[in-house]
Image (cartoon, rainbow, N blue to C red; front, side, top):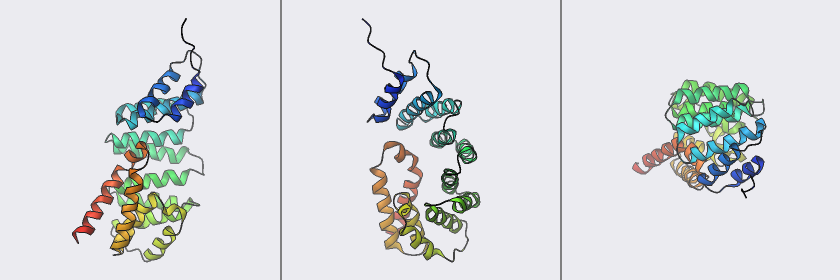
Length: 242
């Protein structure tokens, strides 16, 4: 007697709770192969779990293709554009990643638009396209709410990298250090702003905290932050050399 088919919704739940990329992919594929008709949301979310499995397995080209399939279902399009951007960037296609991030900013609800603009600005910053980064980060800072100190600080960092003078640098550092968004990614920004301000001890402390937290994060986040990790380590090496 054949085994009873597991419902696609149950496969989605199991994929979301999976501890490894391999098991996530197994459950996602099982749900996608269901003989029952999938509603668009379940279909898109199963594809997203398959994307995560491929991305965590560093199969970035395949992950990007799956993200594009999910985008065709027009469910949480801005979130899926973010997924596609991460895969394209990890696969070495910066322009495709930027296109996805711009689409996310256009298609996302107002509540998520500042985040998408910030991600766009951060990607441009790491690509050393500082003027474009500042333009995106300025928009993020204008519309941001609780994360506004992070966006303003990232904007200050992009302006410094572009060779501009930032007169309120210490106030910007203090505002981010005192805000909840100063944790996590904020430590990366704080470390580089402190370095720009000549506060090398503080810079070292912030950057080491960023690296420690990133190393303990989920694989997908660790992959997404590889550019920041390289920059943080390079800055720490400069501090040590001096």
